[in-house]
Length: 204
Image (cartoon, rainbow, N blue to C red):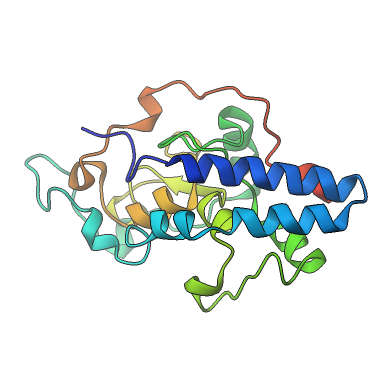
């Protein structure tokens, strides 16, 4: 049984370091150096790590119908609100921090990426409708809130069922169950505490 969809590579961890340096350079007033680090974090190595696990999620499935697995429930019987409310998001983020509970990579909230894109539109490309024209580093480290038990299988949008995840682990997991993907339950592992603020200092 594996912990995550796909183990992070050195290039993914390096992208987080490059983005940290980019933010530090920007805050120090060195826009040229910031742009250089942003471009370095948008690497083909990171893009290919995302692909095909992100673009073709069915390739992530290990076991289609394991014995004893949960099954999809009728929409009428699901949690009426799939959206994770702000209070639950704050509680989950306070518990998990800015690190994926599946693969443990450092993650960055979308607000930081949006701000970086506004400041450096060339070095931080982001076309919402085209996954291949999105900054690879920010895409890979995109902070997500994941339903461990999928909403379609009756999972609730509460802090007991929601964890912080990266983009690949969330989108790659899709609506499949842990059993279908042969994944261990991240809630059985204690959150890792690290000195990483999700680069939110860019928003200050």
